[in-house]
Length: 213
Image: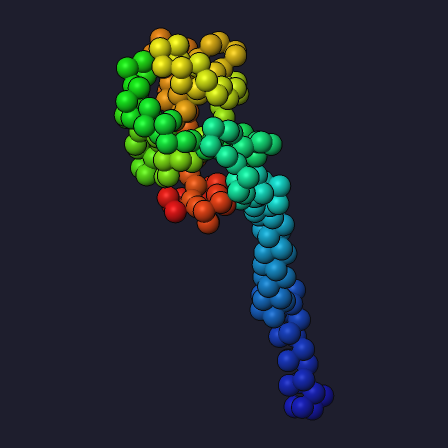
């Protein structure tokens, strides 16, 4: 056997040892890369259900989206009809005349919270006698603060002493004035809630967006 043949056989033996008894670095790197790729795909697949769960559906987004209300046909002394809903709750929009506006400032003896001291019930711009951004337009959630019934709009005689109208809850007899303020001694603990809103124009409201005007 020549020296060349010996060298070739020696190289073959070295490669055989690296494959069988030693470490085949090329094969090892291939396996590591393949395993990492499979693990990454699995991680993405596992994460997708959680991402999908936390992403709100179109229906959920629409439920909390702002709502525009055109009250151009509303006249003083009336409540807008049909009633518009925002986040599944009825929105009461009432138009008040000058006499009503003045009475809201003076007829407060029967009210439990005439000064709207509970900050959770209205935005800051609605902390006033009429609980609204503009005295002539009242905007309230039509949900009684007792057990969640929807009060009825009463044009007159909701208050015996003054004959003032307001809101009357038929479920348990709670009464509210035309600013949504609750009277004393009834089951409802708080004034009607004022939702966030702004005026897009003199006759269009946007419910769900903060801002007085």
